[in-house]
Length: 82
Ligand SMILES: [Zn+2]
Image: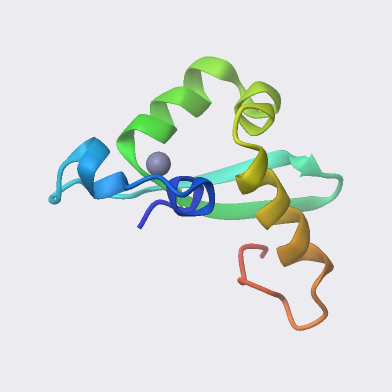
């Protein structure tokens, strides 16, 4: 499941097809000194590539908030960060 679509409540398998592969992506600008490792569906990957990290996160606020809560959680939260 695409981390972004899942956070945004979208159905990635519907958007991309049930056989779609998840693409590993790294977000470098979300937090200073931290790299967020996420899995994105093809559409989100293209969106991220075309929009850039900042605009991508601005357009996927729920996803951005998921990243924030994952970082602030003491036990590592969703484990998105290296
Ligand atoms: Zn997605």
